[in-house]
Length: 188
Image (cartoon, rainbow, N blue to C red):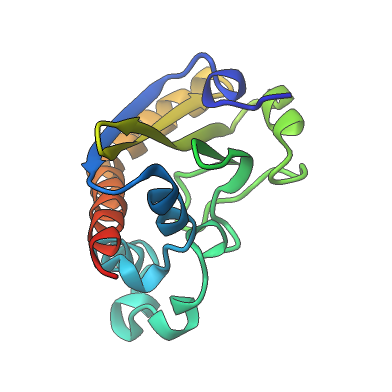
């Protein structure tokens, strides 16, 4: 089954979309995306430091510990890959109570698209994010879309407050990723 963004979360409460034309062939952009490391993302690391609370405010994020890790496993609480269609699209997903300083997750198999799609227990927010690569002229349009769906009205209200504060950071992270990929495709 082809688990696209549209199949995993066809309806949603919140959505954001960003894109950038990368002047490199689709295969090169794909490999750069898959090889992206935490150390390539200074804005993201700064936001992780803020989100991490007082201990990271003082100590910071140990970039060395994250340097060799790709973004899909940067944190045990990060979204998991749900589907990939190289070199066209990768889809990540997560279910959590994001309003907590340390988001909690339900007891389901993370990274399982069927479990994700069928999950409807009240009190949670489901998030999917993709990176789609579309050939455009002699380059590649790299786009990312994030969708969020709360599983009930209470979770929807809580997430709306959270999103009001966190959306700017989410947008900065997406731009940081797109900028890093563009930069890395220009360097041999």
